[in-house]
Image 1 (cartoon, rainbow, N blue to C red):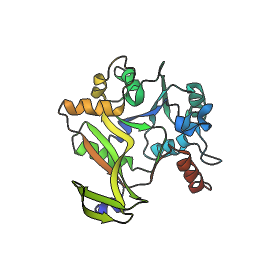
Image 2: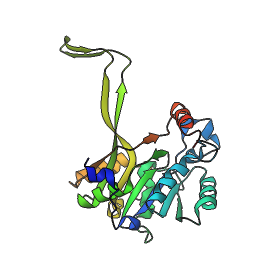
Image 3: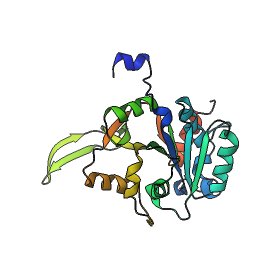
Image 4: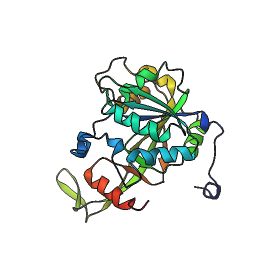
Length: 249
């Protein structure tokens, strides 16, 4: 990280040309019973905002105004809420899956869609992040990689002592260590041409399947490390944590 990065936000001249695809078709089963009749992205975080509002608010800061939604479960509720609140501010497109096809299968219907930009940003709808999209787009173009995955460094303190051994011989013991690892944030930038690799009628096709396929083609996949605030709203514990965090915002 350089001083210039801290003093000003880099801005890529083509960032406005990138469309955004938001994957909002999941059932949110881990958040039942809240998600029984409410799509995950419309869960309230505070009096003013639902999960999707945090995501869209950050997109608008960077003038990312062309937004596609891939929906399935409770698609009408998602479309009605977003259209009512943002149709005067954003160019909105909705694509409904007839059957759920995983975290990447629904992208296939956009492969020949002329309204989709040649490069685009893909985000899961249950992500709350303050990621700097200008930096991300700069990284994508400067590295000349057609597929970029955004990651986040997570540090986690274990509740138990860590044992390392070889052939039943102890060689290290550490009391409740803190481990660090990078996680996939559910945010990507990549070329539209990769959508042709997705099967036309997959029963289920996830992003991991697409990434594995791209790697098998010997295409370069880059990693962009995000240092901004990031949350995946996947559990009741995490939801309650975010409600406390954003209670007065």
